[in-house]
Length: 162
Image (tube, rainbow, N blue to C red; front, side, top):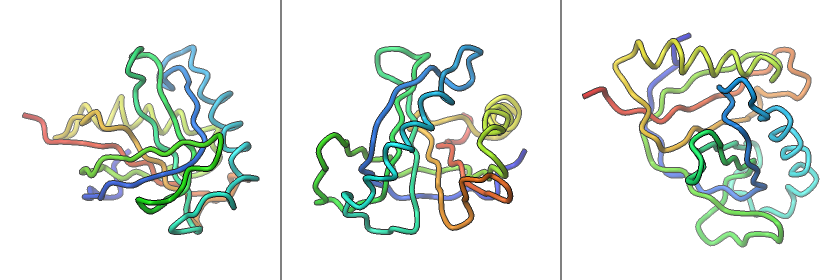
């Protein structure tokens, strides 16, 4: 699996719901049981977020500071710097970074295969390493919940190998 493109992206502020899960690359990961319900809880509350673009949603994953086998995740909408955070939600900011942009096609049930292809095949054999800034999921008009024909982008923060 190769990236669709390598691209510089600015920092992105998101407001949404946060969860924590076992790293999706581990055999005992609970990402599937945790992330889906987080999105399910966010959807009825989207109108509470003063989004700058209502045609897209983002997921943002980063390693937990206290446990390298755990990840933090936010399902959210893009907002401006002064957007108020609704009760029970959180705001996070992604880093401005160079990203390898991949596409996941189809149902989320196959998303783990996409992640493994990126991290176990492409990244080790590329001219890049992960930059530790976290990964971004972009859900736009190409995404549908049914899975058939769906496309979502997965952005991996990278830097050149030294």
